[in-house]
Image 1 (cartoon, helix red, strand yellow):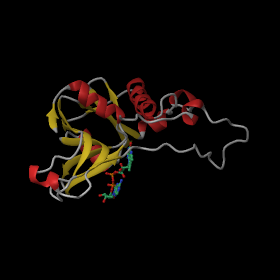
Image 2 (cartoon, helix red, strand yellow):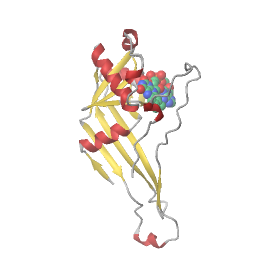
Image 3 (cartoon, helix red, strand yellow):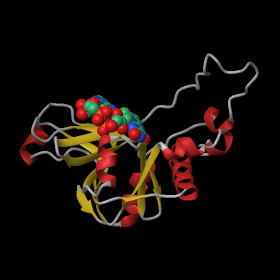
Image 4 (cartoon, rainbow, N blue to C red):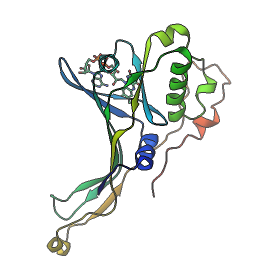
Length: 204
Ligand SMILES: Cc1cc2nc3c(=O)[nH]c(=O)nc-3n(C[C@H](O)[C@H](O)[C@H](O)COP(=O)(O)OP(=O)(O)OC[C@H]3O[C@@H](n4cnc5c(N)ncnc54)[C@H](O)[C@@H]3O)c2cc1C
């Protein structure tokens, strides 16, 4: 297990993750929300309604702490104490800038959508001015950031290796199901390739 400030490690985790947890200290107390996100170079992109409490606070200058975690396996040790999880996670601290202007906001939303379902953006109606005006887009610098990764088998106390208890790792991964058509989908609309062949990265 190790902490890691390497940007390639951080970016790889961010690019594979689906959900970020965004925390701030709000005037009503600490608050954390799960949210989708994107990454454009050195910035993490977030979006929400302009009245979104957490994002509006960030737009007003609140410092945020954001984490993204991937779970790779459950680590079963011979002692209760040494049970663990194989994971890859990133924590970022910082203040976001508000992404302004039609082109920049549209680009950011494009990045968020296509990062999650590559190819989707070009297939759907683009946001209109009203929708863009109702949407707050934030860009958080990925500068004060760290990654932490655990891989491999359990690490037991030497004396415990003689115990009978099974020990090892139960791998976990995201499973992709068959696309389920919207009941109101126009008859004859084919499932696009990016949905039919959708996949998530598989870790060895
Ligand atoms: C996988 C995922 C992706 C999401 N992506 C986005 C996104 O990209 N943009 C976006 O704006 N929102 C997203 N959401 C919804 C987001 O978590 C918030 O619900 C939403 O942003 C409203 O936040 P708010 O601060 O305005 O909440 P408020 O309306 O102020 O929330 C009031 C209270 O409701 C409760 N609450 C709010 N959200 C949740 C929640 N998710 N789970 C449990 N309780 C909750 C909390 O107690 C909170 O204090 C996502 C949620 C999930 C689970």
